[in-house]
Amino acid sequence: MSASEQAIEAMYQLARQRYAELGVDTEAAMKTLATIPVSLHCWQGDDVGGFEQTGESLGGGLAVTGNYPGKAGTPDELRADLEKALSLIPGSHRLNLHAFYLEAGGRKIERNEIEPAHFQGWIDWCKAQGLGLDFNPTYFSHPKADDGFTLAHPDKAIREFWIEHGIACRKIGAAMGQALGTPCVTNSWIPDGYKDTPADRSGPRRRLAESLDAVFAEKLDPKHHLDAVESKLFGIGSEAYVVGSHEFYLGYAITRGTLLCLDAGHFHPTEVISDKISSVMQYLDEVLLHVSRGVRWDSDHVVTLTDELRAIAQEIVRGQYLNRVHIGLDFFDASINRIAAWVIGTRCMVKALLEALLEPIKMLRDAEAAGDFTARLALSEEYKTLPLGAVWDYYCLKQGVPAQDAWLAEVRRYEQDVLSRR
Ligand code: RNT
Ligand code: ZN
Image (cartoon, rainbow, N blue to C red; front, side, top):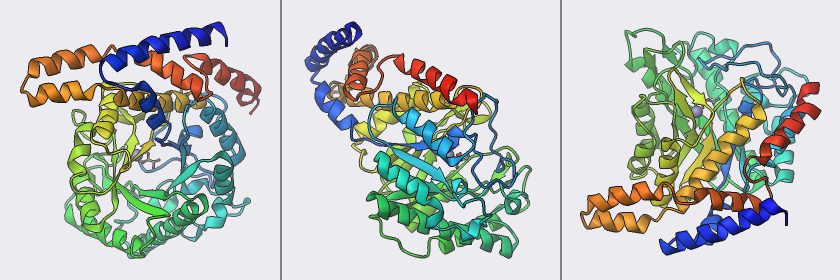
């Protein structure tokens, strides 16, 4: 053991004692943590570019700022970058893929004609890496999405095209789930909306419900495949009206039995998804989270250990929702090293889950039940400075990934050896 490993071990033993005094078993927390997958979004690695190579620029009101060198330009590069990132993140996780990351051997395949075969490379790689796979239809960055409408488009032919894309994607998701032995969550997000005040708010929503019903018409085995629908408050170019609002999809998910996807960046700035989880769980079997960080106009900054991230993790653990909440990430930043962005965001998510698992919740609940709100506030403030970092470092060590900031040197080395040569 190196000196720094010895220090981590010693600090952990003290931390373990401190948590034990509060009735918390750090070993049990780490054991549970190792079973919680986080779905890493492929699109952080190439600025939501995809591999269709049609020259189409990023659409759907999505924007990635920055031009940090070394962006992945091929599936092999993206996989190599993901392998590097995953080697620096403790635990075993999942990959979240978008449909336009297909591998078609240089041929142009229309979105409504994609098949599981176009994702075999990803499936094989995930199998080799021990990763589960999640999937997303790509309803943007396409000429048929250029006027801002897809599934809710007034033109029936365009709606049909996108319905066919949705159906194709569910088949692909089911094939992924079957091949990997873990259900694939296929999440539908569409950009549809208006920049300015609509004259008809209802028509597009009626069309969206009909289109989604057509997409989801075929029942798929939940052992292999789960559907999710994702709402948004506004996007660039859809500031006044988004067809797929929160109320729209909450109602849709409840009545149709799909998952609801809550993206942390898709609500009013003072609204938080941490408060929504326990509400929607009263009516839904399962939810998907897109853990993100909204900053002013942007809904997709790299996840950091904010109060809201900690609250999200607390709600999942406190509510005993670990088997009903699928945790996915959704951010994109091209102004810093893209692999570091994945590592920072995912390590923060896992760290927040560890903090939640280490929470002396019984003390807080007892105080609350006794009506002793003084103690509830006093203790929750004291618990904020429990030695989480000591357990986190030890967990990284035990999981065989760099502890503390040692991962950054690995990213720098990779940048020098691989990224700077692209
Ligand atoms: C967009 C949604 C959606 C996308 C990805 C790329 O606002 O959050 O989840 O970020 O599908
Ligand atoms: Zn999202």
